[in-house]
Length: 422
Image (cartoon, rainbow, N blue to C red; front, side, top):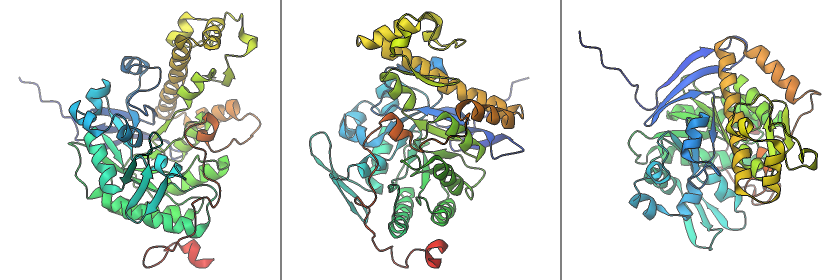
């Protein structure tokens, strides 16, 4: 008898495969135009169409299923004319798996001295040559359509921490307006669009933003404006406030979060997707991530250390080279040193997510979570909520009041119950 044809679910299908009984942690599978992504998942960051020091082949061998690239940087260089001529981002960089592109909003809003916020978008000058650009919902979505990414992010306003409530309210109004406009734009074939929950440190604003985005019917949802310098407890509460009312049947993504402990805690709150530059950025500065934390391989203590970067690690670096050799390469400026340490750090991150998924599948997430806390927070000491600050990514967070002037909310005023009672 003929065999039945296999059925591949359409892009945007999100299957919740298993849920932890004691937390919000869950196993999932997100289908995209370039294949399925098992969640929870960590997305290596390929800002300029490359994950620094790694080839697409490396990423595949390390087990990466989806990567992230950046609209702002690719708009400036190589530009959309080149991207169109080269057939889109997948062909351009030689990666055939799923790609998520951010809208460029975070980078644009970080250019505090080079941009002006308008009702319909942001005017800004290139940090490279000063050329003028405008990025609104149509422009952000058009760039991502040209890139042909599997997941496109809405343009949003990423507010600083701390931020006064009046400004936060107006910012949420803008984010919601832009989100609705993004949904109206043409997409690449099979392209998914995620909305972004904002609201700063204000729980009622985050909940309202999440509810209104959910009502718009996005393919998935992100929590933005966290990990921007706030204390860890504030950051985790922001994640919880943003996720609480989002639909169960859609994936949830926390943008820019890469601390291992914080990712584990966010998964416990129902988060499915993460990205951060930490594993590649700290490798370039000579820091290794291990099961028990991180340490500086470049340090003099490892000058003649014959052990691998992490004992028991199965990555190519640890199976073939010593700490002494990697340290030597880093200290004399050899590219191979950065490459080897990047391979190790990325292996650690992707293995961390594999172990996390396994713990959920085996109903052992509670024990896994407790062990993670005992290892990475042995004294209960909270870390900064900003992995961007930790790894030196991009422009430092804006200071309170820096271009965060209180502006009136859109017509009808702010609908936040918290605002109304204060």
